[in-house]
Image 1 (tube, rainbow, N blue to C red):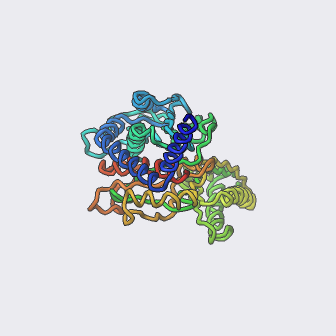
Image 2: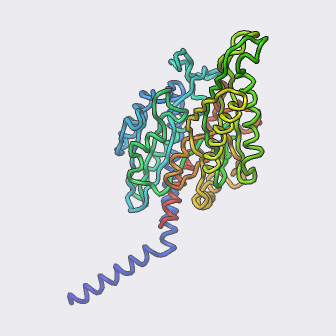
Image 3: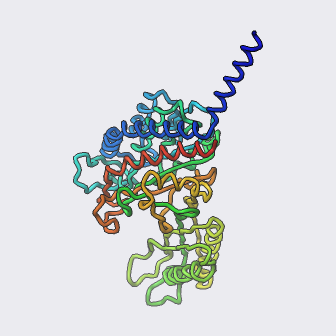
Length: 441
């Protein structure tokens, strides 16, 4: 009798296990999870706007996001998440453990604002001021990072509501100083990684950025290189002062500097393979001299390098220094070249992007998925994507019916974000997590 009971029990368990592992049951289970996720996302639809307005009204500059961090931390701890603060100065990191065993994925939002005085007529417009490079400045979320933080706060709450059904863990990364750390300080994604953010390495990282170049409802991205690397440089051209009427008695650094400017333009157009990837070398400032009839001792040139290939990036920096030094030498001057190594190329992992494109199309509608052009702006999300496969996409925030091409750009004091776009940000990020886990089964 006992053997029959045991046999019957095993038989029933076998049927149960077979049922649980069947494709039809799995599909029904996934559908139930997606239904619960939609309900959770809907439940935060008003909260995300409230959070965004608070963050917009009280922006803080890079590495100074103290109150922003407190605001985020209070929310995350209220949900019972494991929270770590003070990462890379003011960063906040939280981990959500799914109810089912699976991989770890990371989601990132940047926290910092810009030294810009807001000129948008909003009831929650920023009136905050701060000190930037010794000057009193207005502070504004002119790049839309307030939207990113509010969206990730909502994503955390939404995923926490379906936590037991998640087949993996989620790392929420609220990052300071994406716009660059203050002079003399470290910060941003690079410092977070340096301090061990990916000690437990996620298998994928996702991030989004609002943009006025797309309308609400649209999502833009591309496979492979998406945003350029950014390296700023300073070239000090040392000559020898003399009277302007007798240039042969000295060495003219202004003429040498002008020759350097022209010569370096041939690097992108004549020295590197333009069929592989585009590149840009631009000069933003020329400083030197005080009078019309005095040839100065020195001239300072300031500029930027943008590339879409890491190998080409290194090559161009070498060529820039060599060109400046040799051109200056040919004029009897000397060029000291200093390159500040900035953000790497932001690359969307091809396999990850292809795998998750159907998710974004499902959420936004295939007609609203835009393949963006290469963007010569830079992003320090690039550091994460060098460590693990990454997908970074753009969320349109120019109201429907308005020409996005005419909208004030990110970093403008007139930058405006349509709050109707926030829900799509929440829906897309949460669905990416759930679908990624489903694909990893």
